[in-house]
Image 1 (cartoon, rainbow, N blue to C red):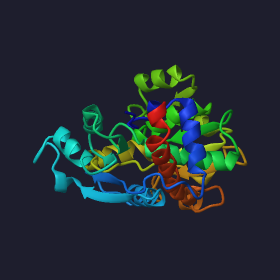
Image 2: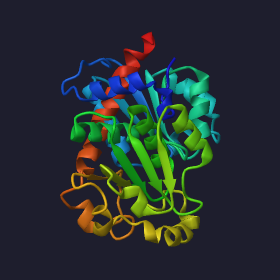
Image 3: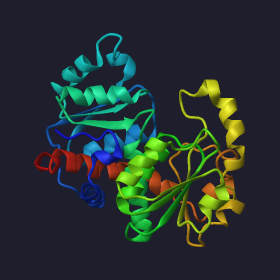
Image 4: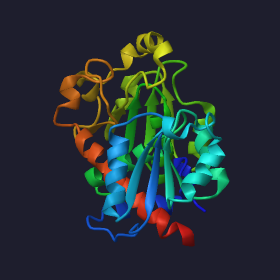
Length: 299
């Protein structure tokens, strides 16, 4: 049984296939008569609605389930919640605080599990990001992607996906907030090139795309002021974007805080592709669900 907990749960050729399937406007309704459970310990706008519509477009029935409804490790163990949901649903997606939760769900082996976000990774977002860049560039491979800001779950998944597609990734973060040696080793194992720096100008110079994310994620409220202080020099401004290639595009996984991690004139400007990126959350999810339910069983 296949799951998607992290980007490198896919092989590079499988990732390419998922992106190809995501580009099919009228897919086969492979989930007809089946349901997909969507468990949300953390609320979300794009993740919930993109997954619900992706399931509907494949002919299935999505069920949104709040963390309080199932009470994982409170009312029942994670494992028993997973076993129960697998009695009714073909697949289970979960947006959780702790990455170990999705690992435990997958270990049950009762249904394919999708990581809709954890503190460690966000593969669904990375799929949408790569789909957006593929649409922009026509192909993936040989480009340079600069990520400026907190080396968080989004950054980590994107670095793995970039490596699988032959994209050089440069990550500029303040000391203590960048990707770690373990992340760099995983990128290297995939044959990727990862540049880690504390200089945003170095990361962005000549880049084909520039990416950022919010400085403080849900659940980090206690360290919010400390993180903001460290990340102030890492905002993506018009001046920083001018360091990138003239054809460069700007990406942000949203929600955005204009005036913090990105200037309004950047996210709302001509280089921005954030709304196509947001739409692609649905298309990328559809491609993954289609692959996981049909082709992954044979791989």
